[in-house]
Image (cartoon, rainbow, N blue to C red; front, side, top):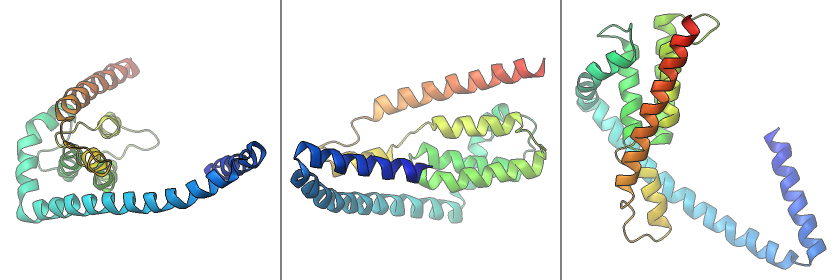
Length: 193
């Protein structure tokens, strides 16, 4: 479906540029935008490679296990019913660590792993469990301490201080996470009735 939509948008743009007499500008834009897109992808790939490597080092050095223990009291409150040495709890902590560092793309495979671990431990059947819903909500809101991807985009765009957005990111991401978890909990309580 998305392929049809994108094809329609491209064909419509080309047809309109011919009708409006701006086809030279469209041709020039296609050429320059392609180069800019490749440059942006390489910048983001470099940033993700660095932070993904840092996450692997953290995992192998035992830092993620320490982070899991540090997060465990809070995670046990949010994800009720999971055992202390739960594989799902470890996977959730890894996923949230990547989210906290602002590594949305690196956090995605960790989130999938955490969801699969929850599925194995809670065997939900046809419906998602409350813990699965909370994990999905937390990944959608993804509170960030270090907005690495946004900072990389800002640096690429020429920002003199790409991390100056940090206070706003902290406030908004943690506020949205708190509200989303509260709503998920209220709706879960309502669904039990």
